[in-house]
Length: 306
Image (cartoon, rainbow, N blue to C red):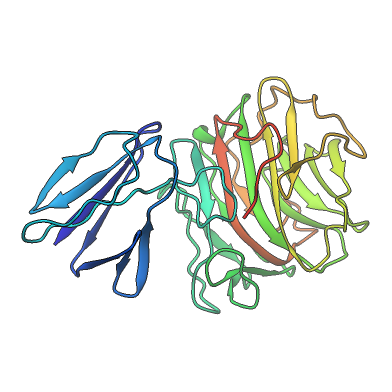
């Protein structure tokens, strides 16, 4: 058995993979069987790289040149650069960092009902209704999560680590042809002034605090256009940022991006994905790569989606 350890120099997050079959190196790509596990990148900063050689771990210098080491000795494994993905939507699945509280991805066989919170084991996902992975539409990997709007939602327990009066980010991919009004996610319980998001019957999308303060945008081409779109909202100490496909929506049709700068948007209530807490507006169609990050607002200007 050989272990490959990947460590991020900035966050300290690590990931260990144990393998019992050989890794094949071809050019700058490493494959395990028929699966590509790592690809050498062009960015030579930020990460620390390790290799397992004869059962030992050898540290390589952070920010070293992009060089794939040559295997040597019995059981040696080549080392490859692993560029962590925290802020490149669509460029493969997100990695988990210390800010990630919820990360729900879809990369399963058609009709599978295995849905997990990859970020934290103490926040297991409860499935209500007939939500499943569906290969009809897929943005990252082979599937996405399908919601049929008939009391379909995922529930993820809230904890004190969700509470924040400071920076946070919610981002995800959505695909819908539904022209009705429906909720995308909701952190509220009865009477609480927490964050929720929905799309309207007029092909707009909005986030709201409680039920009275909403910021609404009308993306070019509309929301219900049967195409994948990346949606992100985040807040720092001075403003909110609302992004549609990586483009900052600086002039919402209603609401202010500088309101509710210190409101606790999550609290300790459970997150509902795919429906609001009154169960009156279920989401229809597909969602992928839903993430909640607490303590960070990674985007303050336009960014690239993949």
